[in-house]
Length: 109
Image: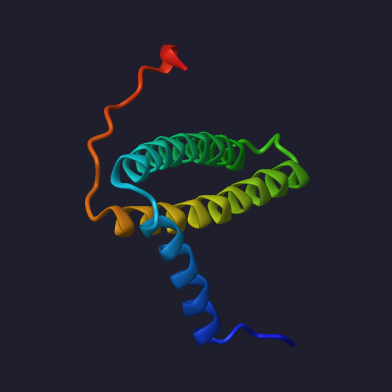
């Protein structure tokens, strides 16, 4: 089994941080705003899947295989959101502050 050592993880993280720190502040801020918006969209979609799974779980007419599919989808989405959150955190660390990101109107997408 090939476990990634903490020094390898730290090296990878430093490489990403260096990539972001090489960007100018305006580019980095635009990237941060984009990442925040993406994160909000992922969370909203995750919540919709969770609510569907929760409703289905309360409905005795829903088959176990459908429930399992919804659960698997929710778990997969959580992993994607976690990875995106880590990237967002790295961007914000490099930027040094959290930019103001107004809530988007659903109709403006």
